Image 1 (cartoon, helix red, strand yellow):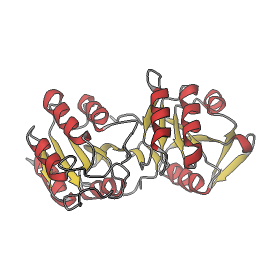
Image 2 (cartoon, rainbow, N blue to C red):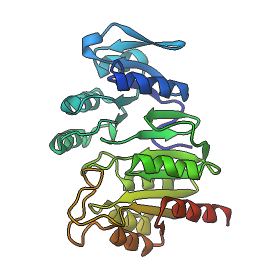
Image 3 (cartoon, rainbow, N blue to C red):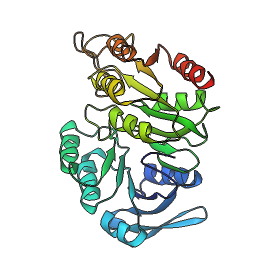
Image 4 (cartoon, rainbow, N blue to C red):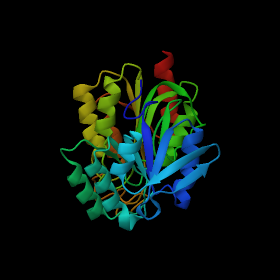
Length: 292
């Protein structure tokens, strides 16, 4: 099985008519994703040709859902407009909103995250590569040709490390890979994905990729200790990061002794998670477990 996204998912793209939205819509279609339309209020009623597929453009997410049965939205919307776009998707009742946009102000994310609480929408992102269930559906910008369907579940803060682990473990393949994003506030956490992988009968092993800053990995370790029966391996990016300097993602910053890669590694290993010091070492740990 897959988590959050599968072959029955029907995807609309908010921002499909823009350059990034158009480019990645084409790639999602090539990966077999059931993209059913786009949303752009200024171009409602038009259509866009993608090779052999012509997709309609709707004025609102609610209209797109009513006309196509869409239950997933992928957002390629400029940062200044992302908050309103996510709130629109949430108010329409979309099941999953995948927010690719980088540079969303943290207070905007806090507002749309709070708006979604108690409603039916799961948010992934912002500042993320999206989610892929290989061979079934791909919502976002993750390359679809670097892995295959299999038995590993992957959740990661980092897009590029998601791709690297997918490639290094392609001989085993993946049920679903979730890029949750590296901002200080994200809609779906490590814990959310780990819980879903634990409940998925086809996921045999879980790979968790974290990075410096915050305490998400420590909290995920506590969750694994208390709730997870499947083997888990991990990697934490940033072992050489200097204190007080943001490294790549907005949330990747060490403050004093808090949030260091070594502290996260120790917290994860204390609950039985095997942690590599490099992505390749992490892949080797996963491979050893799956072949034992």
